[in-house]
Length: 383
Image (cartoon, rainbow, N blue to C red; front, side):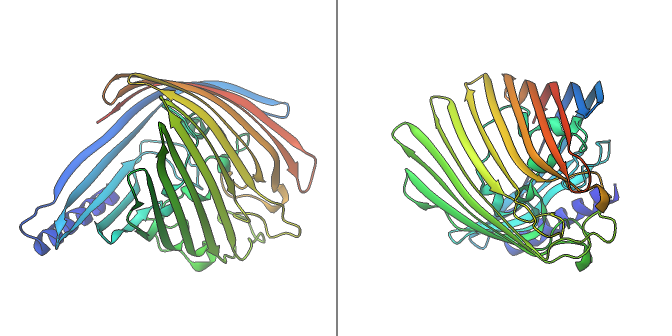
């Protein structure tokens, strides 16, 4: 409640300051959000240890937006409160509310500036085609343990929100072909809200840059993107027991492209994690993920199939991680199919079925395997 009141106070304070600058144009505040109730059955297997279970879960968001004009340019704020955990903590969901993102912005012919808790310019990155709950990159991660399903392939480095400043260029081009670029500076990764993090516990001076293309050729709509993320040195790793340390820095990058026509969208994206969250050991191996998919949507329904493959160090576990149990994912594969039916604007029924498997290569002991499936049904109301 305290965090909610602080965030609300900040929003009101910003509203008054903008009004004082342009009294002739008041900020318009709008509320929105969603409630989704999900039922799921799932199986997780790690070597000979197997667990099959089922449960219900509810997820909710509250969006607060303010928009107006000041001095000839647009200004506003955008906040989202939710009960969804963020990377890299992967804490179990409960009834607590946290700030997912919250930033103020100014925009005009010069482009757009955003300051606050945000994902930044990597929001321009093209994602795998999906519908409803998101299939391989969606709601399934809330029902699985990080010991059997490495969530680094879903909540990767470019999807983390943090307190930062971002600049987006105007969209340049003509009616059929437009390009936009952006640059984000984040003093400390894994830092959001009122957090003040020691330089020993976070990547520092993180730079994100991205460019996106939106266009069309005849009846085919095209989207493409490229992004890069660079973070400076960090000592003791997040949630890691001494004496584990991480590399002095990392550089991750990605490419993506989608094409759509007549309701069908196909796409592919690639991301190289570099040394992000990799152990500081000799001969560090590469980390990457590839996602691809196809989706078909009409006015009242949609279906999709998507697939993820890759390899990485399995640091996406609940901390702390012991140096003696560091594992590397030699291979990861996840296949998903899903659908959505739209009863009315904002009211949808959703279904997802995802199978996954991953093969561990332990730096210390023998290899292990994890596998399983998740089947989910949900009812969602967005307003």
